[in-house]
Image (cartoon, rainbow, N blue to C red; front, side, top):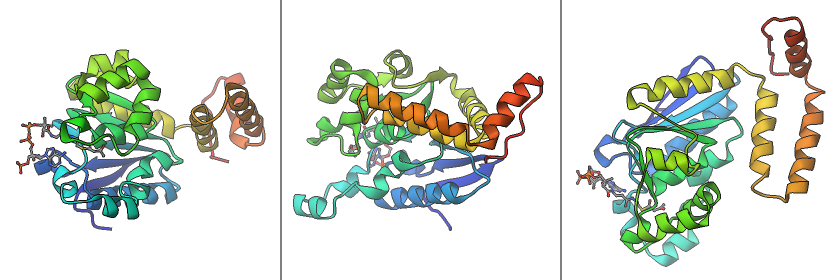
Length: 258
Ligand code: CAA
């Protein structure tokens, strides 16, 4: 498929998607989100891809949903078409791991898209925030929920009600981003993390991701029970036996994703 707003490539077992609307600082419009969802679908279906990375440019991961596209919409239109549901949430329904590599602005929908990914590695020039109230609107692709779960109520309220941005260091202190790295090494560090994940057993990686995500949906007791059952399930996977045998034999495991 030919894309106009994103670049898509594979590097070994890693599928890399780069948002590419430089003139609009990668603002997310419907076409870009359609392409992003299609690219994720493609990597999900590709047996050779074991981890994905989503990134933007050095200046902007994404400066938000496309304000110019949104400006003319009205309530009946957004409500009846369930605007920003479905395709706009595709990264959050991805089964394979997806890492956001964020440099520059990740504002509004850009911050929300990064938060839909499994974790965020930020460059030291990253600026993240939910400034929608400046436009007379509010976050629309999960920001009020995911930011609050990531940083807690007080800081989420501060960010969403005052529209201020966090720099990379504050975002890391607050737990929104997993790590901050120098801008020049953002892709190298992110690819290292992605390659490590891609070198592991896919069933174990999918189960680990599913277990962590479950913690947002259920009580602690139910979450621990769910984890325990998945843990038991790894004993039905050949890679689990191989991983433990390889450790005992002091050699590298040879995972076959079965
Ligand atoms: N939508 C549409 N176009 C955008 C955009 C956006 N979110 N952000 C930037 N652009 C466009 C600008 O209009 C400009 O285009 P032109 O050259 O045609 O004028 C181009 O990108 C470059 O932007 P700037 O000249 O503004 O660049 P800057 O370096 O001076 O400022 C910025 C950068 C501070 C990020 C500024 O662009 C900005 O404030 N952008 C909007 C941020 C924002 O409010 N995001 C939230 C959007 S609402 C949302 O996302 C809703 C939701 O929850 C789903």
